[in-house]
Image (cartoon, rainbow over all chains, first blue to last red):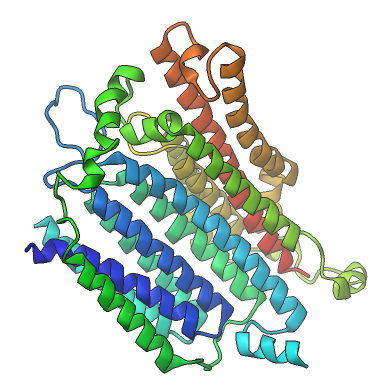
Length: 118
Length: 332
């Protein structure tokens, strides 16, 4: 059992759940969004961890060097685009939060629900 | 050795993550978020993913911090202490975490070359990139050509998110419209940004051109070294955002006006799609670049260069438009 290697998966699990905790337990909408993007980062970490090969190197060919072991490039491509999509969707979420603040005067979930019930 | 270093960084990452969730002051949480992203980028680099590390550093530590701060300026900086179902949430989170950790004992070992993920389509890409397009960076080859459909889809998601933000924040709030027209803006252009602060302004002025040059290098050297349209778009946007923070938003809009941002946003996505359509007109399939030149390999290289340019244009246009949408909201 390679404990040190398994640690990457544990960190993924912990990070995933720290983010999820912020989403379900915090009332502030911006904090929820931060938690959501942390959750997303944990998934990125899992993908990149799975793409790693022992003694591997970045999947870029160099002239004159052959017989290299390359780590798997496919998860990297998926995550590379996902990061940029992630920031765009976070910006959309922040835009919605700003509009909520303007209409309700608050970004705390319990206060917004209270206003809605009135 | 690198594994130990990885463990150290991961532990640091978890500590920062807990600190972010616990921070009452959202400003502190956002600043720690920048550190979180930098640590994440370093870990990606350790895991042989320099392309991803570059993206994470530019997007996570640079642009997302600025966007969060802009949103904080429009809302509230302090979080009110009100935790709903704290105990229940803790129980759910801990149970799930333990379940996932339990599952890791059955998971494939870290770095195992015989893991399912490494015996599927991945090796095929590594073996055939040289034959089909002859560019050293396999990540760029997959992104641009082998999985060009995915990238086109992702680009449209970025484009749509940008349009969404402009729809949400592009209009003025109703109640202030009349007041805003009669009021003279309190801030004149000369006091915008950090104009009155000598040291940040001087260092910033030195940095902006270097950042932009590096962005262009990352854009056009993406086939040979880590880089490409997504990273370059984020870096160039970050450079211009820095200029806007230093010299004020009006000055930045004079350099890159609104119509140019719109043209970049739409033009990049259009360029990407057009490359695909031109391929069809020349007798190939959609997004098949081999027909773009006499030699299929040259055609592939040309295609990848063009679509990366499209990606870079749209990403920088969208990120800058989003920034300006938030910044302009501040004035009302």
